[in-house]
Image (cartoon, rainbow, N blue to C red):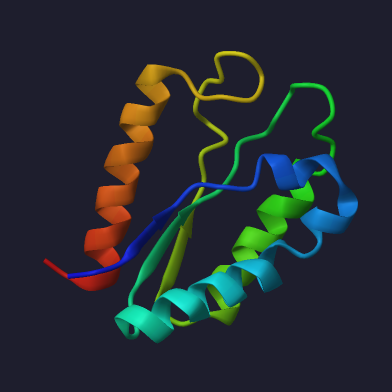
Length: 113
């Protein structure tokens, strides 16, 4: 089965203008993928609570990610805020392993066994 696993938005959290457009930009991208691959499912990992300087709109992006899941069929979103960051922006290796498992769990919940 074809689908989309997506973890993106950290850079968008640097400016309010990009942050408030996250859901709309995701929808445009998803529509592009679906035009090529059909009505594919998508699983989105929310960005973390970023502590690195210059990322003051992470909460706006997180809200937009929830909005994207609510506004688009076949989209599931899950939190990552409980996972440790190595530098205030990027996850640790251990965190990426947990996030990978969450992608798999959410994919199976969304698409079935």
